[in-house]
Image (cartoon, rainbow, N blue to C red):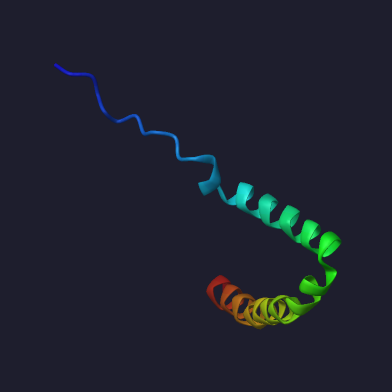
Length: 69
């Protein structure tokens, strides 16, 4: 009989979410430090993202309360 092939190969480090988040934070800090004008131009993207997150909070809380009852 052959050896079991159930062992999975470890995914590359760049596919991990926490590595991607840490990388994005570092890039954001460096961008703001070395190119503040470009960072200022990207402000609408950040503001839009925050508004989208805020828009999701109320429905999530509502659904949590409804399902919990």
